[in-house]
Length: 362
Image (cartoon, rainbow, N blue to C red):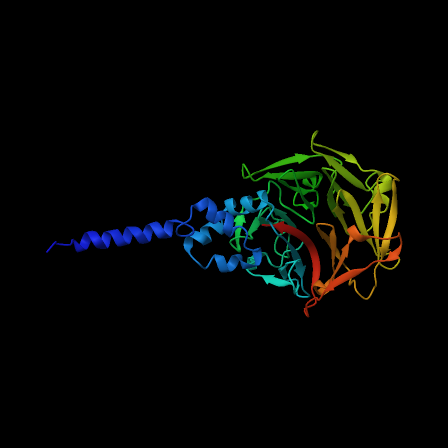
């Protein structure tokens, strides 16, 4: 009778298990497995991460979001930074394509920064960033925290070059900008910091055109526009525009900024503003006519100011108190000045004020 080496058989079994665990799907090449898994809707990604360590590592890896983005499989969710009556900061997320749309809490904002005011809030890649801010115990801080939407965790990131709060925060050409605001040193109020994720470094620059009283900001036509709450030069100029090719700031077109009186968002390189001075109107800057056009009116029963705007595709989400949300599709607009057709998303029972809304795609 032939002798069998039990240790050799056991070793072969262990190697077989290790080989099975090293592939994404047993019997398939990893590139085919990735092609299959990447097509699973984003709402099921937390379930995929529970299947195995290999699947969890894949979904939390930059390769995953890069692949989905390259093959146009990425899905955009909306993140809202809110504050309650006790000055506690929370972050909520909304899947705009879900059959039942509702806001869900994002856990894990570090407790020691949750009461800071004037923090910057921005999305870059598959991460959200909370930057700077101030509180009763500190004037300004340069601290930065990032939230990885794939791994669902917050970590401390590279600090800004300048401690600041109540500043403009935008992303342009895959770089993060922190502009103006209040700084611990008043001279730094005329500065802006730029973060490059490739080098993981911040760079600080100064320009006398940059002021501290930031009200709003947008990226339009490959440039950053920043609106201020006071008039730095004349009563007709109260916004500046950054030209990345020259790295300089100029005063923005007075006609355009004259109608920029509320929260703004850009859709298809067109600027939209929510004007709440006379009812609630959605306004659009018509570049060809060089004038503001009333797109339509919204029922005051639906919008709950103060509101913030964010866009997914051609749909503008108007997010008000308690995260009460109205959705307007600007791709289906009719005559100018009409009552806009919209859908609504129920808010929460908590009395939240929305500070900022951003989109993040994975």
